[in-house]
Image (cartoon, rainbow, N blue to C red; front, side, top):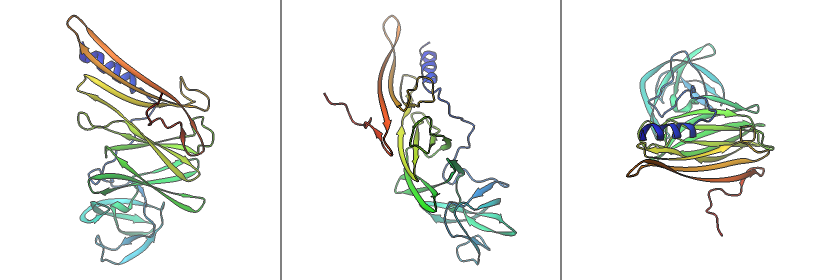
Length: 269
């Protein structure tokens, strides 16, 4: 009874409208598949005649150009903190090789702007790098990840004025207790502003959930983003089972690049 109750409550908290049919990405060990159309993440990326950094350069590719994956090779090269494989690819009428770390995990479009994604590593920290071209200008954003297994979803402005749209980085937990919330990345005039929200449970005994409720969702408010933080503890007493829940709610406004007030600050009396 205890386990069923906790699972039901936790499942209800996670009943958001994101699609879990999205592709799950991870560094290096989630390779591109033969036949995939993959977009270039770097700029002036070298298409080489052989899978090594000394071979002839056949062409320089711009960010956002695409190639077709033929196969992943056995050759690799250290790049951005990872041992990145070379891929054999087709580009126009040519066949060549590109380092995997220079290819975007996928392409997402928000309000007419294309966004490209790649992993990097600094020390023990995994980062998601995002690039876009906004009115001819290159924008870059590095976002630290608490969990490197992710999928990427996009949304419109969700009913918020002066917001181009939203990129949602969805964590996919692979181990007990691993972070499985996500990161909302707000797109505004080329800039990207990230807000990480947590969700996890502890051996079916407790849970912690943070979520945004947007104006276009049930329970949403016009021109407001509701931030809801909820904690729950499932306990067995001497006679019966009981569930303790604590909820904290903030009403936030999008002020041309910032959510106000700062919902990460502790309230003062």
